[in-house]
Each structure stands twice: as C-alpha cells, then as structure tokens.
Image 1 (cartoon, rainbow, N blue to C red):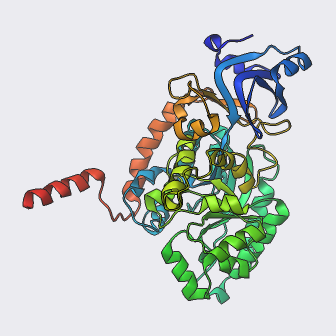
Image 2 (spheres, rainbow, N blue to C red):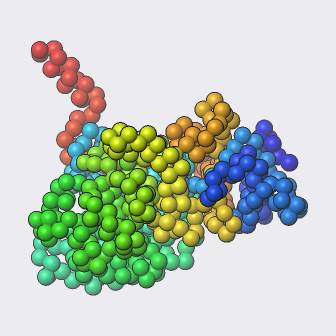
Amino acid sequence: MTDQHDLTPDRLRADGALLLEPDVVLTPDGPMDHYAAVVNGDTFLAVGPAEQLERTYSHLTPVRLRGHVLMPGFVDSHHHLTQTFGAALAFGEPSEIFRRLWVPLEGALDEEAVYVSAKLAALESLRGGFTTVAEAGTRAPVDVELVAAATRDVGIRCVLGLVCNDATANDADTDTSTTLANAEKHLVRYCTEELIHPSLAISVPEAATARTLHDTARLAAAAGAVVQIHVNEHLAAVERSLVQHGLRPLEYLHEVGALGPQLLAAHATLLTPRELTLLADTGAAVSYNPVASAWKGNAVAPATTMAERGIRFGLGTDGTRGDAFRLAEAAEFAQRLAYGLATGDSSCGAGWTWLEHAGRGGADAVGLGARTGRIAEGAAADFLLVDVSGPEMRLSWDLPWELVRRGNRDQITAVFVAGRLRLWRGWPLDWDGPALVRRAAEMSRDVLLRAPVTRVHPTSTGARHAHAERSTAQ
C-alpha cells in the first residue's frame, strides 16, 4: 500500500487500473469517508466503500492517499481561450469591452498566436482545477482546429464553439447557407473525439439572422450539442434589442425558436421574472460568471433564484482567471452581496450549491452531463486529488463549504482528465509548461503592439501617478 510520503506521479501513471483510497471521496451524495475509486482507462470502473473494493479488486495494490480528497474536476462553462494575451487589460474597464479589446486583439492573432494563447489558457485552467472548459468561439481568422489542438495537447476536455455570426446591415442580403453548412461540418468534425466536443456559438443574438438563430438551435439539438450565446449581459445590449425587436434578448431568442435545452446562455445577469420563467419552462442553461460581473458587468445573475426554480446553470470564468476554487467562492460571495444581504439570507446556497454547479451542474449546462462532472461508476475519470492536510483545511467540520470558502489551487496535488494524470503539483509531466509560459509572454507583447486596442482606464501605475499629480496640484 502506497502512503502519502512515498506517493509519486509514477505511481499514479501505472499501466492498467488504479485503486485509489483517499481520506474522502466527494460523491454525488456528498463526502464519503473510507471510500475508494477504481480508475480503468478513461472512466471510473467502480466507486464505493474501500474495504469492499479491496476485496472485489484484490489483484490491485491500493494507492493510499492520506490527507487527500478525491473530487470531481471543475467545469468552466464559459471561457474565451484566445483572449488570454489581453486578460489583464480588462482591469478597470467599463462594460462591453469586447468592441475595444477582444475583437481587435483576436483579429491580430496569427495561427501560432492562437495556438499559444489557447494552450496557455488551457494550462492555467488545469492548474486551477478545471478539467473541462467551454470555449465560446474565437473571432481570430483561423481554423478552430488550432484551438482544438492546443487543448488536446494540454489534455483538458473542451467544448469547442464555432462562431456562426452572419447578420449584416441588411439581413435580406445575407446568405445563411454557408454559415449553416459550416456549422454542420463542425458538429461532424469533432463528434467522435475523446476530449473535444463540438458546439456552435453566436456572439450575441443581434450578431446572427433569425434563421441562423433558429437553425443552429435545431442542428445543435439534433447533435446533442449546445449553442453558446452571450445573453442579457449588459444594459446596452438589452436596450439595442428593445429598439430593434421590441423584445429583450432572451425574449427574442424565444420568439425565433432558439430557446431550449440546447441553449447555453452566457451571463444572463439582467433577467426579468418572465425571463426566469422562460428559462425554467424551456430547459435552457445559463453560465453564471460572477468574477466577470465584478470586473466588468452591470449586474449579478440571480443564481440562487435559478437554483430554487430548477434552472440549469454552471459556473464560468469568462476568461478572467483560471482558478476554480476562487470561482466557487465568488459565486457564493456575489450572491450574498447582491441578494443575501438585502433579504437576510446568510446561507446563499449553503456551500454545496456552488460545488454542485461548478461540477455536475456545469457539465450538464455544457452538454456533458452524461459524461463528466461526478465521481461515479461509468463516468469519465476527470478528477482532482486535493490535499486537505494543511492548516487551511485540517480542522474540518463542513467539507463542501470549506472547499468553497477556504480551498485554493495550491492544494491540488494532481489533475486527471479521461483517466490520465495531466498535472502534478501544478505542472505537466509530459511537456514543458514553463517554456510555454515564456513563449506566451514574448508573443503577447508583439500581438498587443499591433492590435488596435483602445482602453478607457489607465494601468494601475498610471492611475496612481494621476492621483499623485492631482493631490500635488491641490
């Protein structure tokens, strides 16, 4: 039996099945002491009481993981993998920065920059405990296979969006057939991949014709995929929709037949009671992005209300930072500040809600609920080994809530995706992670020098100097 003190990555990369015995297994029914899991190939062969599995699989040598929790990998239900080079440019910026930052930035990316940017984002996500990311579609003028290759090479599961925007100033002149043909090809191209799962994407409802909004929904539903659309995120977008259609964006999607279980509505921060009912009645899913709300949003999605209404939702980073534990904390924190304080709700989901929607709920939202997001027999072996023996977590009374409020990515010993050890103590074992970081740092400077990016807010250093100058003048 292997103890924590002699646990090595090689012991977790052994050929054949692994019998893993941590202190706790975080199952769909909650934390289970004295449980174990058998990983065989890319799935969990069995999960149950350790003594029982030792008897059943007596030919396997148990790997004892003292001081560890075996838990599902997190699911990032909304990411922009090719915006990584400019992530820090969003600090202090007002809403709808995509026009001034993201569109110009992605337009300046060449093929190598797309691959390096996406690979860097995927590495950051794995380091933060995400085993699945939903890529909302790049605007870079390249084949999305470059993004697929980057995530595949890192070893993270990716729901890969293909942008299907086709609206023009005069929709009557728009030929939607090419857009829809490309969408069909994309869904077929990745339908049998292990780690890449095809998805369609439309930036915002106004970016596509009514026919494309309807038909992409139909194509995705038939393929068991999702359509990712930014919906009701900013006041300006809501007002444009009201002027153009007399309907709010989510209402408009419902009118054109695009609202249903295949929809993954990113953000959905500005929702009326009627729109909440539309989401509940149609089975559409939402990506709740609390850090994005804090950094550049107009509002916080009513996630506790969504949970109570049975509305499907996951947690997303929107590319802000690839740290799953901090995302779960932000999910609870934002609800408490936006809604809980005003109503006297000191629980705001009782901790477990955010773990649930960061894992299994997120997997369901991105269309992978039958495949990942849980530690259970037959599920994909996408999981984390989290060290809870340190001072932050050792005095444990309520593990799920402690993981939400006190967990951090430094505690992640190992990350597995599809049964393979992808990261050990924050770095890959099969390729040079630090070299990628160095290359990305060099390349990002060149990209940002040629990208016509416009910022409203100065850097923090610039803001400090301006403040000092004003103080001196007074």
